[in-house]
Amino acid sequence: MSQKREIYCVIMAGGVGTRFWPKSRKSMPKQFLDILGTGKSFIRMTFERFNKTIPAENFLVVTNQNYKSLVLEHLPELTPEQILCEPVGRNTAPCICYAASYLKSKCSDSLMIVTPSDHYVANEELFSQTISNCVEFLDNHNALMTIGINPTRPETGYGYIQRSNSDTISAVKCFTEKPNLEVAQAFLRSGEFLWNSGIFIWKTDTILSAIERHLPDMYALFNGIADQYGKDTEAEAIAGVFAQCRAISIDYGVMEHADNVFVHSGDFGWSDIGTWGSLYQHSRKDKYANVKPAEGCYTYDTRNSFISLPKDKVAVIAGLRDYIVVDTPDVLLICPRSEEQNIKKYIDEVKYNQGDKFC
Image 1 (cartoon, rainbow, N blue to C red):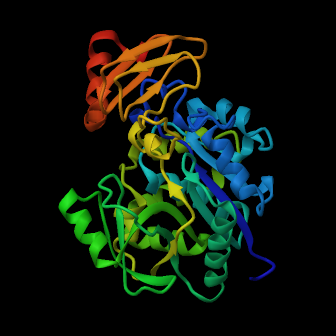
Image 2: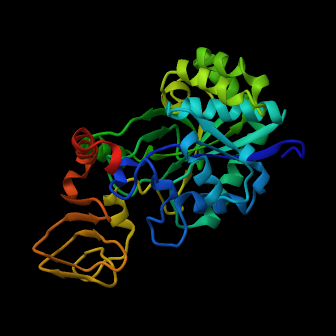
Image 3: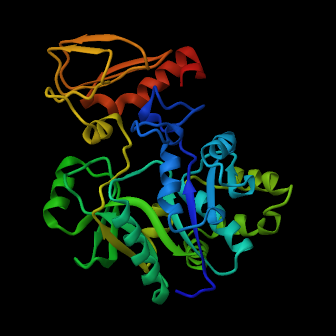
């Protein structure tokens, strides 16, 4: 790779993580929580995963303006100038356009690795090799790259990428949003589809050119304030841009339309751990297939359930099958694992009756 090109890691950390309610709240969303019990938050683990090869000064974090202090608390290696603040969430396309536009103004020749802040990777060595392969590929190709995960089950909670062949790096045929079970089973049988990890690698110029072509209004908005980056007027300028920016994902807005999209297949123990159910799948279980605290939780005739309790709290749970029980100091959630897709509905009902205090 050219010695002149700087590699940057852009961490997207603006989500609220409603599917992990009641632990994840607007005031303390999923990316800042130690959901896995490792002693580190998701955003901390993400930073450390990339910091092995990318220096701290080459990180940018795009997040909601309300979370800037939280980011700096979890990532003290970064400076306030490395935190790009969105006044309101507008999905991933504006987030990435902001980061690319900002980066272009600071570094004329750069490469971006864009990653969510809240994913899990089991084999970090293999993951790092995958990223290196993508960077090397971009030495000789003007491509938009993403990482696809070899599917192990007909998962309906992930998007899918159809590849043109079975090579490790292949051109992308199409993207598909979260399918129903029948379609997901067909995808799995075909062998042509990978899970969409939401991790991207590209030259900054390449993604900006693609945004200019496929989302010209958005490109014009951010390009119009490029001279404000790093100045006292940046926040006001960004507020004006986001007020006019439509909410759209980078997949839907750019990747599905571009003709230079490639995918690198991966098998390094990836999960977005986006729900209590996915956390259950990745957690150690007792002989009755329950995930529960090591101490203070007494279960009787209870099977296949996920139980989370506050520290030093005792609970007795009897007669549950396939349930989620999440207790926090002010909210208790008890629901069947098969109905966790309704959590957003539960939050809306609570908010309607109780206001934002518990959300």
